View 1: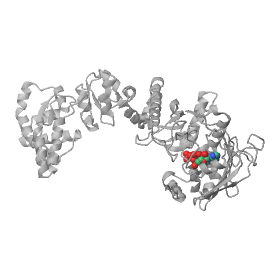
View 2 (view 1 turned 180 degrees about the vertical axis):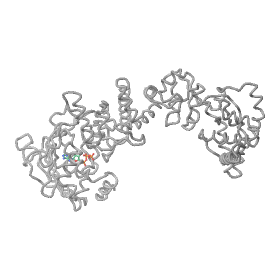
View 3 (view 1 turned 135 degrees about the vertical axis):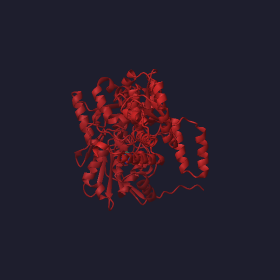
View 4 (view 1 turned 120 degrees about the vertical axis):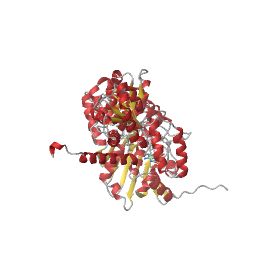
Length: 620
Ligand SMILES: Nc1ncnc2c1ncn2[C@@H]1O[C@H](COP(=O)(O)OP(=O)(O)OP(=O)(O)O)[C@@H](O)[C@H]1O
């Protein structure tokens, strides 16, 4: 024998309140939504051609909310329900009149799931519905065929209880439409207080295309502010700025109109006037068919457009069952792309028409623009033309820098840049700092917009090829010194060379190749690792027979020249070690324990030498 499911209504309501809706405040939204849908259905009775299909009309009619007498009443002049429909629709969970024969949501309506009314049980133990159907037919007064003056459907009262029982009885009501009455359960009266109700009605229904009042006060007005007409663009902008302050609390940097016809979407994007971290999730205010879906909807725009906050109204996007988020489907995906495209166009337009504002925008939001430039050539052009990078020739745009240095280099670390910019610049090698977020990738992508762009990553050791060599005589003379200098730093694994380069003020430069850096890291790991790993790492280190780091002594520097002519080998040792330590410090190189020890020793050695120098006889 087949049996029907039983529903534990209290369990279902509990489920809704704990897991579906974020707050019991949604009860008013659901009642309002039913009233609006009833108006839509009534209007479609009168003019069926204006309804149905994509982009159908929503609304019409009047909805009055009253809060007096310890109860909340929502009156509508909509389609109403026949007694039969009351049983079928109000008392059957999951049944909705707003889906078509195939079970798809009908686009004229806000509701679709057939559960919304249950949210009233979040705040009341009983729901009373007095309704009279506007449909033709019926025999209200026990006779007639519905066409006569006294025909039509009889009014009915349905009282549903949270315990799961309901009753239906005849009621008095002259006009078609519905009145829903709720009496707050203990603890829920605040949610039905007059001010709260007005506030909720304004929040959810402020843009609805109906005549809505709460205790006689008009709630609905002109509709979406971005659709309102203004005498001129300046006044429109002022009105939208004021709207932005009201909903988001900031004065927008700019306002972008949004329009995505296939989603029936219109709205505005407000550009934030202050920088936000790119990780900040863009939360937008979304209306569906003019009813507020939520104030903090995420994922409406691509992530990179974190510098805008939008208010939109969409006819075709679908809500999740909680009506607090957008349903992730293909339409939402293509809408997201279209909105992203719109923001991108605005930015490109700004670059072309208003350079100073563009610069101001970039000062605030350069991280977002850089993130866009990783995937988008137009954005890359904007970055190339407008954003200043650190270079060895001072701050300038990549575009300008490329014009000055046809064969330039970049480094991927800020420290590396600081270390090498002056030296590279002095050798005529243009150097860009690619050490900040996204910069190296952006530089690497430049050929996408400029096939001639040749910016190679700098291999620090290659700088020595730009340094002048000392003349053969000097070189010969320096040999014993060089041998002593090499002995002084041999244990530290570096090779000493003498070159002649600018800036002359720099006594010595420590240069590592990337391979040497890698090997140094391996060495360090090996010192810390246990036996097994140190063998493995040792094998790896052995494989990379890379060139060693170089200590390049600058023969153009007077101090270095004096050191090179010292006769005392012990003094040469401490002096070269001191140059080594100073080159490491100056270049922000990490100091290994052995480096710190040498630095320390050379400093004390020099100090010792300084205080032991015999005082000239004349002074005695
Ligand atoms: N004010 C009203 N006037 C006429 N019919 C109503 C009214 N309120 C509810 N109904 C009927 O009751 C049905 C169930 O309402 P309910 O709010 O539970 O679900 P829904 O509006 O269809 O969908 P959703 O769960 O998305 O809100 C509706 O489909 C509608 O037919």
